[in-house]
Structures are given as structure tokens and as C-alpha cells.
Length: 64
Image (cartoon, rainbow, N blue to C red):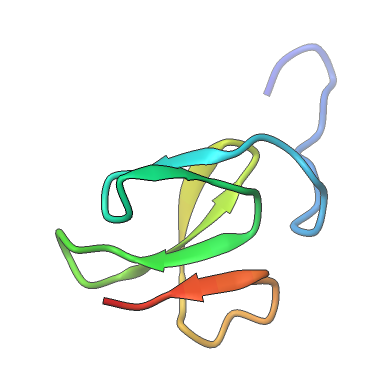
């Protein structure tokens, strides 16, 4: 971190993420099970973060 900024909370709205698995951009808080490693990821602040299939912060879930 720089400039005294702090990370956004998990429920903050932010940027969308590009999903290679779905072949499209998805909104913040979308959870996708990755085709490459079968792990779950949640879109937050325009980036993917590893999560679980039961993540209560997912606004939508896309299993394989």
C-alpha cells in the first residue's frame, strides 16, 4: 500500500473482472470456479481472490 490508502472492504463495489473461464467480464463479487485449477475465485476490486464455493459474499456463482 502507498499514500496511506487502505484496502476496500469485501462488500465494497468496484471494478469488474475478466473471466477466462466464462469468456466475458463479470461484476464485482461474482464467484467463478476456475477451469484451469478447479478452485473458486471471487472478483474484488478488479482482481481475482481465492475463495470457497460457500463464500457468503458471492453475488453470483458459476461452477464448472
